[in-house]
Length: 259
Image (cartoon, rainbow, N blue to C red):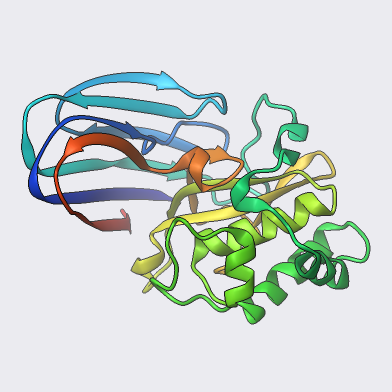
């Protein structure tokens, strides 16, 4: 299936900003699951391509001129393999994804919840855990922020795809199972609010298994991979620093269309 993706991120500032640097991870790569036929990221300033520790494409942009508005646009075409059963493999040891992070810590209540649905470590039981999590903490758009941790989201009993992913990753690691956070895009009819997406994957039986809690999807045949990491902060689409600027506001527009 060939997809056309258009992702716009608009920033506005109440005062003039200057001397900013942006770290942008919005570039998918070709692999066994997907073929990127064309892709471009447009951003003001002087840019440089790098790769991070997880081999994600990392674009840095430095801007010294004053500005009150900034537009970052990523767009292109990606063909995905509808027969993919597992998540994209990489050269890193799965043990890396057992490392604790502040966003994916697990408390006693969460561990008890995980053990009640995963008494034995199997893919089937993790799917049951994913279903139980969505029932326990329903998807509610704009109900949390990127600063929410797995423990806070689980306590609040609501969240978005980021929160579902963090909670499942925290539980998996507490059970001794490597788990990673994936950012990307999702093609689902009539669900444009989920087009820019995140999901979790667990490493079992020598493969990465998709655990898309928010959509109860367990194969990547609707997913486009952009970046992988231990949590949101490893794969954040845009992070940056600036001088001045006053109050920042941001909104995004994302389209994922079959073509």
